[in-house]
Amino acid sequence: MKTNKTISSEVGTQLLFENERVRVWDLRLAPKESTGLHRHAHDYLYVVIGDGRLQAADAAGNRREASDMKDGDVRFSEVEGEAVHEAFNVGDGPWRNIVVELKD
Image 1 (cartoon, rainbow, N blue to C red):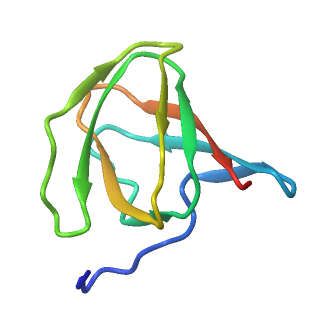
Image 2 (image 1 turned 180 degrees about the vertical axis):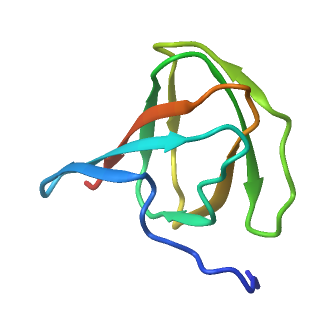
């Protein structure tokens, strides 16, 4: 993968908790804000807090179709090796979710 952008290992806005098995992040984005490119090295899930609309892009900047999500929705992603992407809040209001990385 070739990119000129910095790729962060921080997958959220604030680290809330970490032990040997999990890492829990709070992720907040204002409307039109992006997470920036970040790397997932572990399977993870996230719980949506409040309704919103999110759009993901791969490391090359190719954007996927935006997704409408509802308060309480849960999404799970398996990671083979690593996953690098960026998420954009394309909704009109703030975006928030709690990301749980499964370290083992």
